[in-house]
Length: 46
Image 1: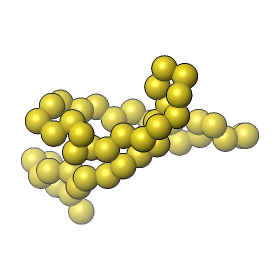
Image 2: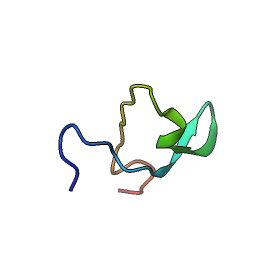
Image 3: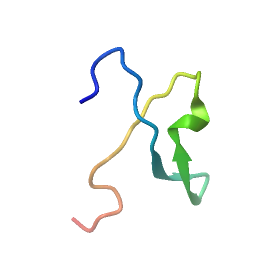
Image 4: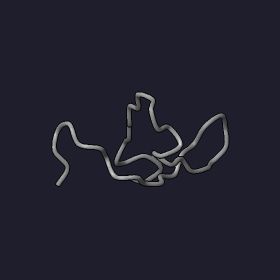
C-alpha cells in the first residue's frame, strides 16, 4: 500500500485528449505536479 509521502508506482492509463484516444504514462511527467481525475462510469452504458 502506498503511504503519504511515498512515490506512486509508474503506470500507463488510457486517455482522451483533443478528440483523440491515447495513453499516458506517469513517468512521462516525472518532476512535475500531477493531478489525476477519473470518472468510474465514463463511457459505460449505465
